[in-house]
Amino acid sequence: MSVTKVHARQIFDSRGNPTVEVDLYTERGRFRAAVPSGASTGIHEAVELRDGDKANYVGKGVLKAVTNVNNILGPELIKSGLKVTQQKDIDDFLIKLDGTPNKGKLGANAILGVSIAVVEAGAAEKGVPVYQHLAELAGVKPPYVLPCPAFNVINGGSHAGNKLAFQEFMLLPTGASTFTEAMKIGTETYHTLKKVISAKYGIDAVNVGDEGGFAPNVSGADEALELLSEAIKKAGYEDKIKIALDVASSEFYKDGKYDLDFKNPNSDPQNYISGTELAELYLSYCSKYPIVSIEDPFDQDDWEAWAHFTKRSSVQIVGDDLTVTNPLRIRTAIEKKACNGLLLKINQIGTISESIQAAQLSQSDGWGVMVSHRSGETENTIIADLVVALGTGQIKTGAPARSERVAKYNALLRIEEETVGSGATYAGGKGLARGLEAPALLQK
Image 1 (cartoon, rainbow, N blue to C red):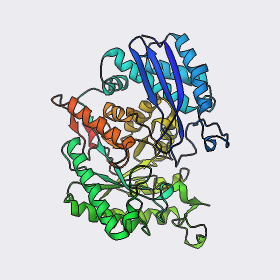
Image 2 (image 1 turned 180 degrees about the vertical axis):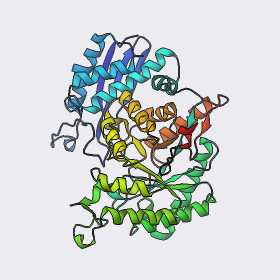
Image 3 (image 1 turned 90 degrees about the vertical axis):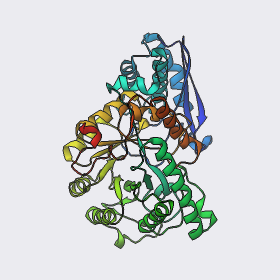
Image 4 (image 1 turned 90 degrees about the horizontal axis):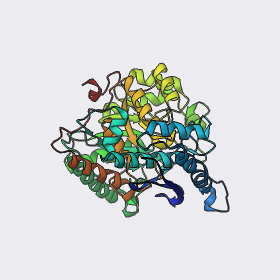
């Protein structure tokens, strides 16, 4: 069945910034998609088209992208007569209409809105759940795997006004036996952490950030890790929870070195450290705390530091700003042995087909794949379907707080319920790469 009508509009994301929503119609009805947006963005990402008109929406309007859907992508897609089940053909068609390597002409946000809506329409056309349709597109056969959630509960970096350089400290309930139990463990520990922080730093320290995590006025990573450890212990889940970090270190890379005091305008260049020294710091944290995954430990173009650390480490090293869900960057990372994990963000590349391709390319080299939200989110839950479809066993979509985050977790609870009795399992820690060892999920 072909597309009969496409209509885009400007809506708002969870940060109050404009974003693109697309309604796509077939004879089966209306299918709606909304596009997320990031704060700490890699320079190699596909282009998010903004209006740049400072007099309106602080320059962040997306009316150009909306117009591109309504006047170009939509009409051309209808004219093409392509069926909504032909996801790859449609995505390729949209990419061709744009004609640039980074979707800079029509906007990755315009293209992605259409791409997601087509997935929804394709699933309805086949009369199957979205995760099943995506799995079939990816050539992944059941039984399905429910992912281990990575809850971002302590915020630093560009997401927070404290002194903390590292951007995210996450809880992973790897010891749970079901996704439902993982949510129980995660929420209980989150509430315990709230009490721990409140007692130590006062009631205003438990205001939540963009992704639902807390941003207490800690002095550095050690203090944040101690807080997490205390909360995990008090909640009674020491044997069930591991820790992950997203350092987002491109944010504090200056002249070939790393400034852990980058939020201080008068930080002392004498105290900047090299990639090798930063690697030693990570290794010391890994020996002291149950850390299983570190994302963006180095700058997006500091390949040497990445390769040095990946060779020496026994945890999952995730590329985000490094790889930006782009098959070309992923190939380079594979060649340089720069990391062993991919952060999969659909809006970094701009179509669902390319997202599937990026995940599978990474897995072909034995990497772990963590499907991810963005800090500016909507209530759209396509990433919940995508992570189950790809069977990668890892998702990060914020703390278990704020509806735009919890929407994804709730969608996964429903999928778990739907797949009961079908042989579906919960990933636990089996989706994580460990140094040179591929994730257990890939070894089956």
